[in-house]
Length: 106
Image 1 (cartoon, rainbow, N blue to C red):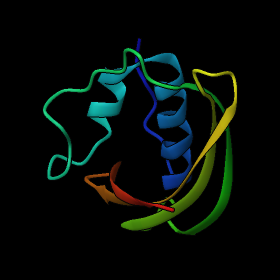
Image 2 (cartoon, rainbow, N blue to C red):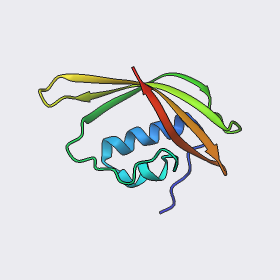
Image 3 (tube, one colour):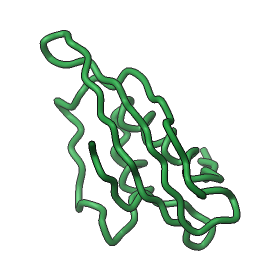
Image 4 (cartoon, helix red, strand yellow):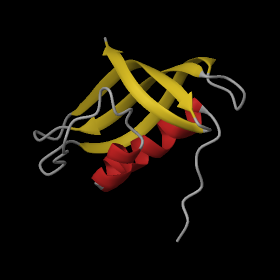
């Protein structure tokens, strides 16, 4: 099966959220920029990701080389409560592919 490369930073962010939700560490590592990516990623015991809200985007279009996506991701906590991760993520496009670089969690 061929995976279509996301055309924008926002599309990559959405695909990475689905990968976190579904436990797809391979996709997360493949889309993480090599300069900031961890060597491995263990998603066992992680949060139960529930929803994604895109708050803002800067650049990150099909013809851009950088982009920022600000998002809020909700998750179910172990005690049954709901948590929110609010992050402003940086992306870079190299050789036609978008990569997640890093982000600031607020």
